[in-house]
Length: 214
Length: 214
Image 1 (cartoon, helix red, strand yellow):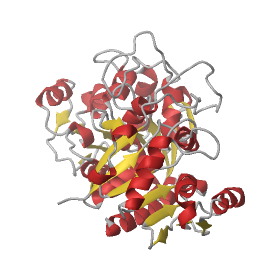
Image 2 (cartoon, one colour; image 1 turned 180 degrees about the vertical axis):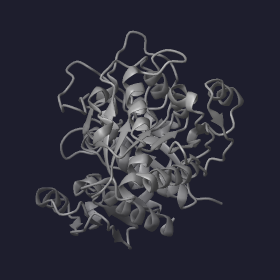
Image 3 (cartoon, one colour; image 1 turned 120 degrees about the vertical axis):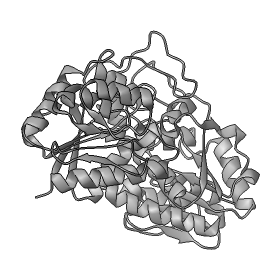
């Protein structure tokens, strides 16, 4: 039986949604690893709509996180509220500052549906992968467990992770950090960059680790 | 010196823009092949705005092809009108039915800026790669040269290609068809599918061939 992995997206495009390369490469390496993936996203408006060319906020515009993430998922996506950890063998959360904000629902917070899901996978002893800035979300839920995570080497973000009780491990872009006890793996991706080939190597190792536990 | 490859996008998301996986994997294999890529898109409104979850047209909504394609290009994108074939060693055009419509500007047509670019690369003897449905655009410009192309095995689309004077070659998703004389390579990608690992194999072989000529 192929492993079933849930992937949580939140919009499409790094400034106001999930980072496109990180999301797509997660799906690629899951499929190449023989897993079936299924995408989920909050059925909520994005925190903002941002022109990904100029960086300007489109005042008054609204876009739905799930509808936009369907561009990455090729239409096969369900509301995050419908994600049942019991039906999956593992979880992947790609990055992107916009997706991070959508999944945070305010500074220091975690979207209640994502918190429920992460706690569900953790309680079931099922593995999870967090990419780029998404490990901060993992820290906010699992910091109390002392989870080991990486976002690369950004001091401020590492400090935010450490404040939750989680441990931050410096890593290079082509590496992942694996917490073997909690079955949580992370990789810096575009927190470090610089290019798609660099982040692909890290995401590939991250997904390989996830599937080895699944 | 690394090879410089121009990638032409037209929106973000297969229904009303460039297909996200095909576009991202083109960038991946270009970078892994040691090339530098630069993205371009028409600085024009999309032909339509379509909900990629439901397939419904968002009546009255407008989105700019270049601004949306910036989600794939991570903000590094220029107007297609600024693409000078003399500055690049090769060209890649990913697919997606929406991107195809944006780059067609009407049934049977080719966006004048894309026509200029394809003719420029052809006249300079520089290689080009067309993915998924994009080979139909190549046929509309280079059919008179008898270019060999594939879109997989869809009879109606193959017939449209043949009507231009181009030759359609049936191919599998993990294969590419290379016209060694005209230096044009194509692969069926999501014209066949079924999954991202399948199309990745074809796109990888397609980009490898392109770079071997560049």
